[in-house]
Image (tube, rainbow, N blue to C red; front, side, top):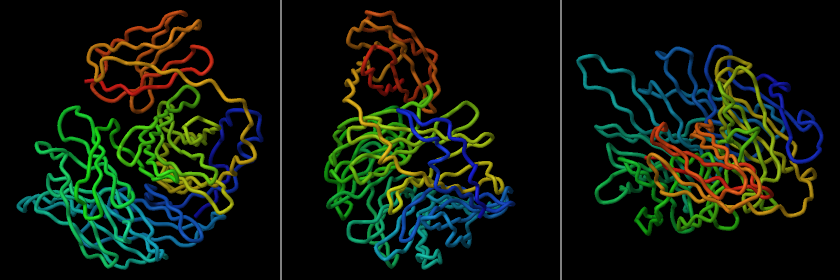
Length: 467
């Protein structure tokens, strides 16, 4: 472990006069070894601190890659570090991390075996569930095998103390449920519909069951929000709009928060309550993690694409998604990914991330604690509500029409891709209430249409699916 108090240069604290960003740091730590890669994919709060999970390996692709776990206390001091490798596993990709009621850690993974000899059948990837003690020692491992490729994905602690993971079994999207002792209790296939198998993208435990996001395996058909009961049996579904959410979380109001670049709030039946996207210094902040604060607001963390690399941003938003305060952190010469966000007992913010060129060596895990904004959030008069942008047709091909309430101010429309890069920009004169945007140059995919100007309140960004 190496202290890196000057690891980040805080570029800005937005919304009001405040102390300097560097004065708000409580501690920063980088963890890893000089000769190896130690990525950060997940971070969760545990008793006495925080555990971060990632991949352990070397810069050589021929050496085995395993599981890298670290625990730090609330002051950022390293409690323990584990590098774990598994028999028959060449590459280990962590896909989920939970802590159970007894304090044990459970990791889901997709693994790849060593390359097969030329005369042997090709090796296929498999799933692996690993249970560890609170100090990171292995209790048991449970493989998920199939003659065809299979794996484990997102993982949650079941309502009954079990471990529930999404994954695949050959070409089938599958939900797995394991007992605390590692017994496979059941396997349920959850197809997109009777003609499409699709794939399961994320999972969250809800009362009496589980909420899933499923995507079809063909075309640009929308995703589905599917609810199953405690036995994995289908209950109901709702056509959705988001793909590959990084995190699903149930909040204190009984609603579901989803981060996939923007922040989306859903009912447990999959009804969309609101969605919000945020920008920092003109660029889209791609949100990956969210945690609810004691006052009902949300702390979100994500990545801002600055051109050659990604920086880390955090923000506090209220229960309706309105931005209250945000900060951007930049570190030159490296690319960061957000692994987790959590709170200390004092309510301060802890962010875990991975960096491809860390201060210790190659890829490192990085954590920092930032003083909370409970006393710094300005008291302001209610802001004017943002106006809606109306897009049609959706999905669109060739061109899309954008309409908004007429305003006496000029409006600038932008289309941003999934990385937050502006791919189309059109200025519209004051008094207009709509215009068309050409899409011929854009490859199919999901984009965000944003508008600036237009007077007080501005406009709410809208997602656009281009076929």
